[in-house]
Length: 102
Image (tube, rainbow, N blue to C red):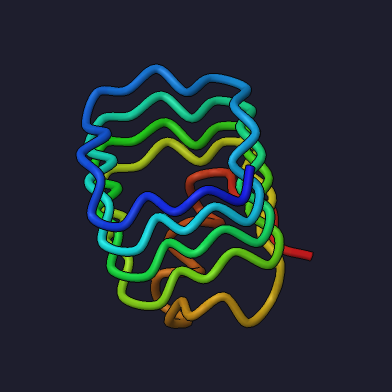
């Protein structure tokens, strides 16, 4: 946790249950990454490419998602906090897919 992975190519990575809390993933490519039950609390995901990623049951409290691309993501049971840099439209889309905001 707390590592710096600027622009890392983690596409298709198997990161199930990984502890990535406070990790800097600015502009990282996480296309189709498996982040099931991962701890991303406080992670920096600005401009990260998360299309087709599995974020089910992941902890994204305090994560910074400004500019993150979140199309076709699996977020069933993913836990988000407030003020993450998501538009209201994106937030509502994630809630419809099973994300939890509190």
